[in-house]
Length: 218
Image 1 (cartoon, rainbow, N blue to C red):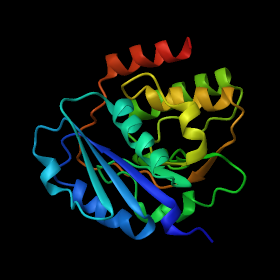
Image 2: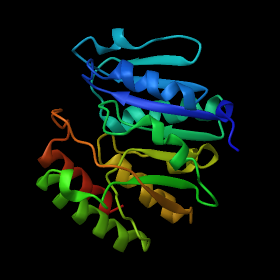
Image 3: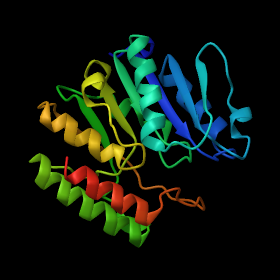
């Protein structure tokens, strides 16, 4: 049985004022610490973060990108000595109540949520981009990467220092998988539901494609 005092969660957010408090509140029962990384929000969402003994707010002065926001959280989790580090998005696409499912980590080093068993609720553009990137990353890493774009993940904190991304944007989550494969870390997947609401994706298609192409040449 995993003890919550061994577990931290990193929640990067950018203009998620409507949902950030709820995501953190629903995450807290499963972890000892939440690192909420405000990636230069302009909607004053940082004031919705319930800062306290179990919640640390990190304010970045401008919008660096998801990869850079994750890096800040990863380094804090390493510094504070947590055994497992969870990442999840701030827009309620990832149900915090499924954290125990991902924490059933077995012998793997990284567990990633797999949304691709239910594609009916995923926007067509996201289906296409996820399928293509997952296929290409599988070829590059020689691993079966089922859902490469899912940010709902569990990491053994001990491996984080060796897989930290250098790219600042959304492509960083692909870079992490390449870095993990080069270190022969084991990557597993756990089925989670596909949840998309009225939120507008922060991912800009051209920048995302450009970043992914750069990652594939690492």
